[in-house]
Image 1 (cartoon, helix red, strand yellow):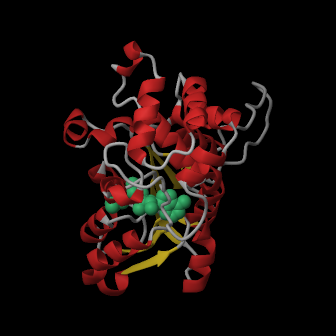
Image 2: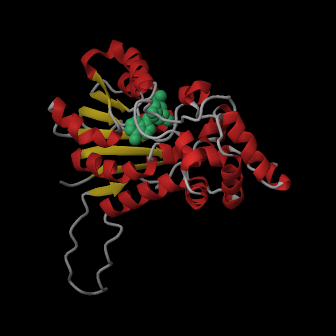
Length: 301
Ligand SMILES: C[S@@+](CC[C@H](N)C(=O)[O-])C[C@H]1O[C@@H](n2cnc3c(N)ncnc32)[C@H](O)[C@@H]1O
């Protein structure tokens, strides 16, 4: 949904845009190319993404800055750089193609590798710690919550019985055999949902999203816009709720006929409320299938 994102940030005033998930800087480069009035601060917790983004954005000189941090370090990074206000933000959540494609990172059920899945390889527990260490009921809960896995109890039981599990190939096969045969044939690879759930747990992906959106909204200048691309329902729910609250959607409607003055909300949703990728995009990039884009604008101080 690159074109939609570039287009949505077209009308914003001149200034800094935060790309909170800069990855390989595909979005950042397109923004800088299309909008000479914008500069981009890219953040990523993955040191390899930071190197790739720096290399990709080098030609934009001081219009681009890339920092390694988890995205809830947004406020601290802006303070460090002396940037008080931003005119845009972008979150393209989840895992990147290079992370998935490199078997050694342990994100993929398609490539054998260690049970790692950490976006930041220098901190936090690994997928191995989750898979081999969590109590069965906690495993089942996270497979349901973060993976919408219908057979979470069966998968969790199979995992606990097979411990210790050493590799992604071992885990993928274990999940596949725990799912009843008729269900294996539906909804893509049978280990897809479990791998997504474990990755979300390892990287604590949902815990920092809401507070970081609040930081980004708090920094947004009038006329500035924020765009968030999500890939599963748990993420989308958080974004929807945050944007709804910011745009006054939670406020009670005043009783009809009473002369109540309603204060204007500082943000407005940019319609349509959600956008999905075109069929052509889904055909060329299957990962985009579940993508949802939400955009918000600051309309008052
Ligand atoms: C889907 S990719 C972004 C791809 C990017 N838009 C591009 O054009 O190449 C998501 C990136 O966000 C990073 N990421 C995810 N959650 C993060 C977090 N909480 N803090 C910092 N980086 C995060 C990942 O390491 C990954 O590189």
